[in-house]
Length: 194
Image 1: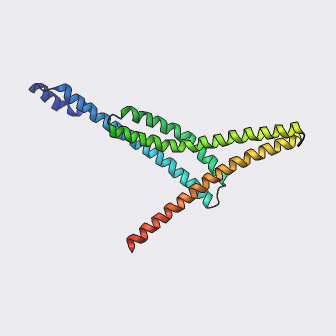
Image 2: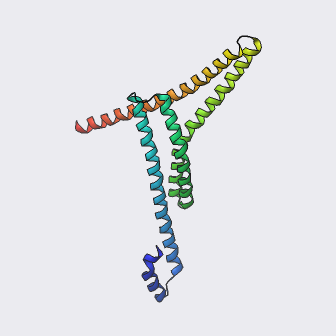
Image 3: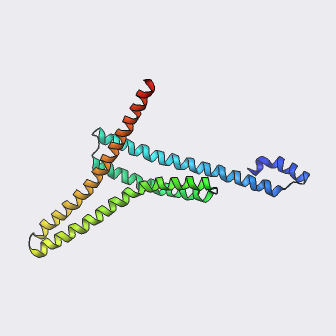
């Protein structure tokens, strides 16, 4: 960027002007442009993730994909993309200087946190279900209520049921959200044509 202003800087030097102040302003402008570029990259990456998730949800709605498979695909997508988005956000955070810029970065961070929260919830459900299932299996074995094999089968079935319930609940929430957005869009269309 400094090269773009070389002629003006040379003229300023000849006139005895404050070159350092101008260079500072150029640095500020360069940083703003870099931040804007990083923000565009973040939005592009996040938008791509959202589009991929929508496509997966549409496959479920059309019956081309089971909800369990859909959630596994979404979790895998998020696992990969959240790492990329975190790195982009770190770069943006380093470039943000003004309160407005810092607030935008905080808003991005909160958006990204929403993607991380579901994975944490699913992990907690899995952990709690595994602990409860193991506790019940051990109790059944020790008390003689069930054989080791039966207790193990019940434990695995309970664990699977808890994960499936969480995944189905999440998918149902997404489908309801998509339906409400579609209805909202229809309402706007009918209001504008009426």
